[in-house]
Length: 431
Image (cartoon, rainbow, N blue to C red; front, side, top):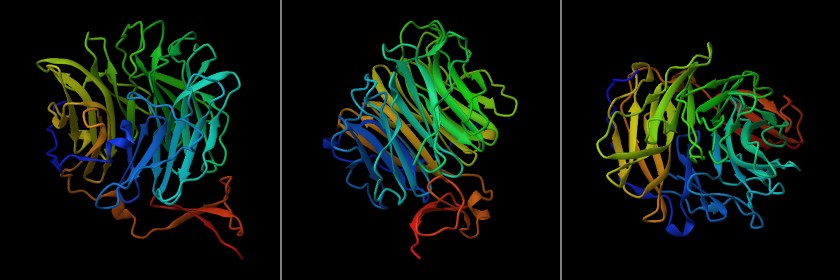
């Protein structure tokens, strides 16, 4: 799987998403239906949002109400998902360690022009919740995952809650972790990641089975109604008696889950990748993403993105005391993952994220020297094959649903118009 050449990426200059006064913790990036980047991050006790307007990023806005503080740090914070012009953002209310502070989700159905009043995802009377992460199903409904712990901060587990009505309500949380042994927990300070395709929902997390901290995935094949299987994605038997504070990330291409994660079993924190067949539920051996690098002291916080069969990884690494933001990209994952990497930026890099759209790559990262979220845009050549968009000659309406997700043609109520290009419109037709 290793050995294909690195994509030649043509990069624009590095720029700032916003001024340093808006903060820079834990940036996350997605794209809208037109490929424009949408960015969130944490600023002290607020979740900030900014979108690309064709020339620059908009002035950031706060998405949380003034009476709600948001949990965030360099290694964790709010998360974002998009589906066409629909945007979802989840965040955990502070203080994070109280059972009385819930997880919230806010939505925009007009590409970030306006956001709806936030809805509670989970507010258990007996459990602490943390680390919300979000994706969407093929219709654009929310799929939210979060960690639950006992009030004494023990018995950490991952749960998934699905909405079938675009966030008006959420189903009861379903346990997604605990596959390594009947007594295993999860790393209580490692964020997770959730991805979806068709009826498959996959919850990636770092396990804690008596201090063996491999990366696992809980698997649902019925759109989150149950999680009936779990697979060890790393099989590295990393024994570590404290929580490393670093979670996995993944994408699905065809019937394969491509994942990336940090593991310290070699004696250094290194970034790995793995493949899981969603048909056979068999996985390849975890592979180091890079070979040996002179002066390397650590790698961490890997993220992954896809566009068609193209794939890219970003992470941070420290070489001779200097932090770098490397990238590895493959124009066609079927040809393998390259041996060599490009460098997006040097120095002062902490957490990072990436998104791809057609032949475009957008990378954001936390730069603690400037105190800003940095951004860089690049393009690469892709094989001359017919793109998915070629098959969509005209935008077609797939279905109309009410707020409960039921197909209907009844007017005089809020309706969701769902199209074949992934976009969705919310309308009220008065007759």
